[in-house]
Length: 282
Ligand SMILES: Cc1cc2nc3c(=O)[nH]c(=O)nc-3n(C[C@H](O)[C@H](O)[C@H](O)COP(=O)(O)OP(=O)(O)OC[C@H]3O[C@@H](n4cnc5c(N)ncnc54)[C@H](O)[C@@H]3O)c2cc1C
Image (cartoon, rainbow, N blue to C red; front, side, top):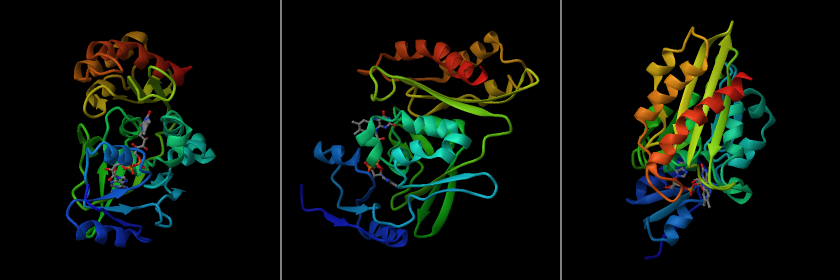
């Protein structure tokens, strides 16, 4: 590999300028995935632009309207350990807690995790179930893309060359809604064989809000809004939840790999969806 220029800008604007200045330049955040890809020569960037020294880029803030803004370089460990996130956004906190193991969580960032767009990773399904928005910075300004539109295909996102994920914005859960992230993996700390991110609000015995997204079940998180709408105003009975899980399974297209065959992953969907929702309801 030829010599690669390495930059450590101290502002986001400078990082964007450096990315734009060299074709094939890439940003590096926690390096947990990118360094392994460099070692394996899967990518050969012309330059590396580190986001690690940009003050405030990892800031976590609760906004006046109840929204949570997680800066791109916030590590999984910081998100997992935030008492405020655990209290108001338990789905996000639980997800961060289940990513890999402590050394990875200490360096891996939310911006890197979403920008990489790996369907086996944990944040994408949690962000889709939370109706989160990805804030993207470029030399032209900022744009916001709903998480459901951000994840486009396997390792492919809505990011254009030269753009940087600057934050993840999570709306406050709807009134009475609680979330849960259920990860099924071969061993503790592994990527998911299948994951379920669920949000549920039950009022007067009927569903007031429901959102369920599957991870590792296809090239992007799998969610079925029509099947969710069919449950609104109805009791979350075993049969109703089975119907939602069946709709999700029909939309899923998991890979065959060392973590499980496609058929095995599909077979996990009904039980895991039921368990995730039961954990919230009980
Ligand atoms: C052994 C191991 C186990 C893991 N297990 C899990 C797991 O169980 N669950 C899980 O969810 N994840 C897992 N991961 C991935 C981990 O969560 C990383 O945090 C994540 O892959 C990338 O974050 P990073 O900050 O290290 O990004 P980097 O490795 O620095 O970058 C990854 C990619 O994103 C780009 N990038 C980084 N930041 C930005 C940004 N702000 N804007 C635009 N592009 C950006 C880089 O150019 C690169 O292409 C695992 C990783 C390893 C090495």
